[in-house]
Length: 337
Image: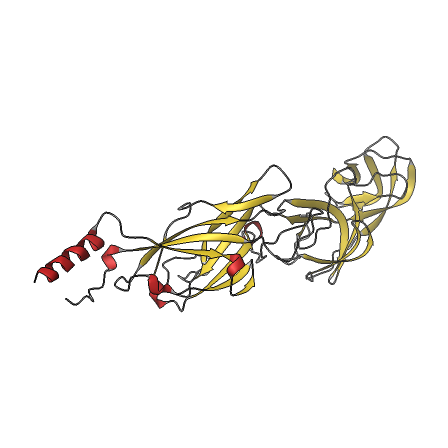
């Protein structure tokens, strides 16, 4: 009887104290069983968790090793044909341009809406520097440059076309000798339009090239963290209107005063999640997405980049500390005394 009373009192203290015990798991991407740093799998033996609770509260912190993560952006004039993008002109006065592999490609023309929502620059083809051809996800329709006849006066930012023009606002305009690289149409109507830079020579009734404007953007300021524990968790995701989601939070980029920076997420910075961890097989799948791209509907994995701005194949190594705290009200009375 004395042993029974002692055991019940001990159980009561554990079940109904101010806070339940926390049990901690440390995942280090260097110790993954398979995959890459941005798609890693781990095998965890959850036998250390008490069996007499159905639900646990999960919190975690996240810290990555240093890498090169910076935001890169370029606006240029070009054209597309099938899965080929041709960059023909950009503003050479703007420094920090880069070869925008893996960047999301969007059109800056109000009348061009038929790029696929997730179009990326995949590989470099041929050319000189940034000018040249790139392979992209195939757009629905080709986006082509046009030629027009017009006149330029040296020192003036006015261009006079021989026929009325529409839909050219924002386009890049070039002439072999009378314009500066990066000149764009910034206003006007009919036959009279205005350029962002003044003409460098006087030309009458000359052929001018008008290139649709594009933007290639690669942001690396946030990393979306997904942890799939292989068990039921209580999270509602309005993206798929269901309770099936592995998203647990977003890590922010922190600069370290050099080209190197890292990502971290503080303990309990994100809301706790409730899960029935005993239903898990012990396999944890961790996926690190580019949070800026994923917010736009993309599924880009987070990758380190080189100092030249070229995305690499993987994310930096990382470590996360995960706590499981039994939810006391879910105690299952399986004790026998």
